[in-house]
Image (cartoon, rainbow, N blue to C red):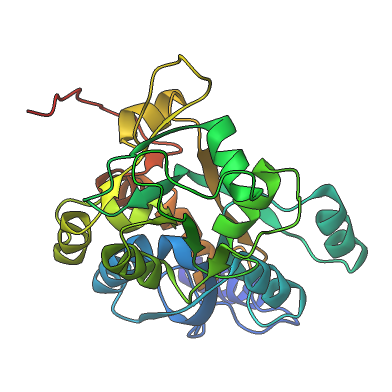
Length: 305
C-alpha cells in the first residue's frame, strides 16, 4: 500500500509539473548554458568580448554566442527592432527609451558591467602629448587647428558616426557643429592605424583596444602610438587612462559600460549577462584593463622608467 501511495504521489507531482507551456522535464534548447543567440555589442568593447565569448563557450560547449559589433546607436536600434535581446553599450538606456519598452510590455534589465574610458592617442613622434579638457574642446569645435610645437594641422579621427566614442565627443562639446578636421574612419582598429601613419592626428578610441598587455594585437598597437595625458584644468595634474586613474576618475574621460538585456530569465542571454557580471566575466574585465563593476579591484601603482 505504501509503495502504491508513493507511486500515486509521484505521478501526481509529475502531472503537476506539466503545464500549458509543456513538460519542463523535456529538453530545453535555450538555457543559461545552452542555445544560440545573437547579441549586439558596441565596437569599443570588441577585444574584451572576443576573449569573453571564447572562454564562455569553452565552459559551455552547447552555447553559441554570435557577436555583432556595431555602433552604439545601431545596437539600441537592434534592441527596439527585436533583432536581439542583449546589447552592450557605453550608457544605460534613457528614461524615455525604458518607458517606450515598458509601454510595449517589454521587460528590460540594465546592468553596469564595468567602468571604462575614452583614450586619446597620437603618433610617437608628436611632441604635444598633453591636453586639458578645455584644449580638447577647442580642437573638437574647430577653434584650435594647429599643434603648438610643430604647427602641423590637427586631424581628429574616431571610429564611426553614432558610435559611443563619437557620442562622447558630442556630449563633451555640447553638440556643437563638427568641423571638417574631425572625421570618422571605419573602426577603432582603423583609428589606430591612421594615427600610426599620420604624425599630426589625434585618435579617439575605446581604451579596451590598447589596455590588455597580454593581447599580442594590443601590444602591437601600443608600440605604434602614444597615449595622451589629460588634465581637467590648466595647471592641474595630467593622467593617462590606466586602471587606477579610471577607477578614481582622476583621468577625466571616463564612462561606464552597460549590458542591456530583455531575454528570458532562464535563457542563454541572461546566462551570458550573469556570467559577464559574475566572477569569471569580471576577472576578464579586470584583465582587459577596464574596472569590473562588481568584483573587488586590486590596483598596483607602478612607475615608468
